[in-house]
Length: 180
Image (cartoon, rainbow, N blue to C red; front, side, top):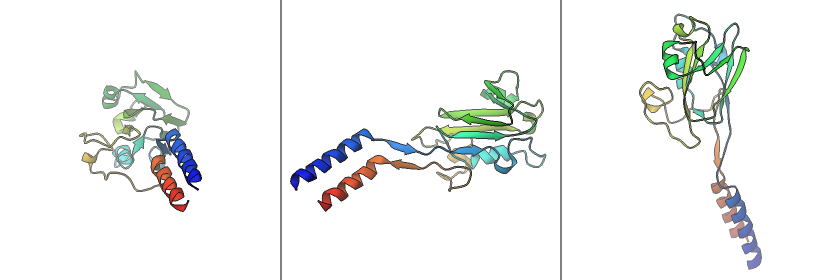
């Protein structure tokens, strides 16, 4: 019986050591939810800022831009604030663009239609690292200073689920050891 207990403990230990880490569920966020990516109306110029501040973006998530007769430009900070469409990092005009958020930090998007950006068709998001907590940063969406709770409630537009395998296997080991 002692040999069986030791054997089970060793197997659980090696599984735990091999899988030490966490599992992240990536989400795809539809930019603008039901309105998609379009020039906001005159009475709704903050639509993309409000949309971004209601979400938490993590490395591995993606943004889906759905649009017609428009485009999406990935730009630098200066180009975002000045609506400069001349030097994009990337440019898309296929009507259904998916952009992978492959690093933590700020991402800047604007419309490639000349006056749309000036009429608030632009988006700035903060992407969190896998285990990063938001720090207070004035003027940057998704930080506590703009009045957000530590995390959103589950919604149809996205949620990140983290399960720490270490805790799962520790519970499994304790259960097996006490049963044997």
